Image (cartoon, rainbow, N blue to C red; front, side):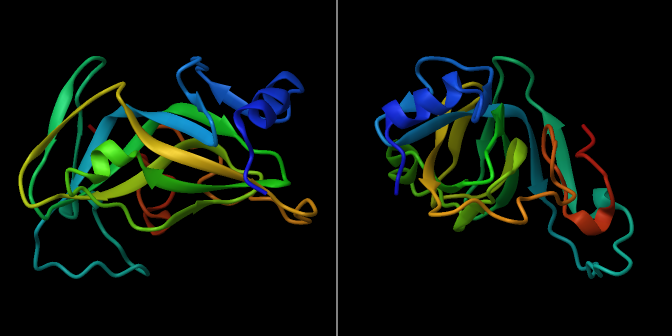
Length: 183
C-alpha cells in the first residue's frame, strides 16, 4: 500500500517516521519531495580499473565538491554524479521507499537508476544522477526527488542495518570503507 499524505503525517506525529528538517512543502499527496543537498561527486573519466577488493584512492574515480548552502552546480551531458538529499530520513521496519525524480526534472532528460530505500533505513539518501543531452543547472535546496513510501504487509524481521545507515552527505561505495565524499 502506498502511503498518502495523511498516512505520512500520522507516522510522523507518532514518531514512527522521521524527516529532518521537516518542511510542509516536503509532504506530498503520495510521498515526500526531498530537496537537493550541497555535496556532489562527478564520476571521473579514467583508465584506472576500480577493483572492489582493492579500490585504492576514491579521488581517482570521483571529483567531489560542495556547492554550499544556496549554491548551484551543473549536470553535464551524459556524465554521472552522486548527489544527496538535504533531508535525513528514518523509516520504520514496515515502510520501504521507491525513489523517483520529480517529473519537472525528468522532463529535462536527467535520469536516475531505479533506487529502493530499505525498510528501517536511516540517513540522507545518496543518489546517482545521469546527465541529459544538454547541461542542466541544479540548485541546492530545490525539491528534486520524490520518495514514494510503501507500507509492507508485515514488518521486516531484518530491517536495514548496513554500512550506509546514518550516512550524511554523499557516501561513496562501501568498498572504500566508511569514507564520505571529501570536498
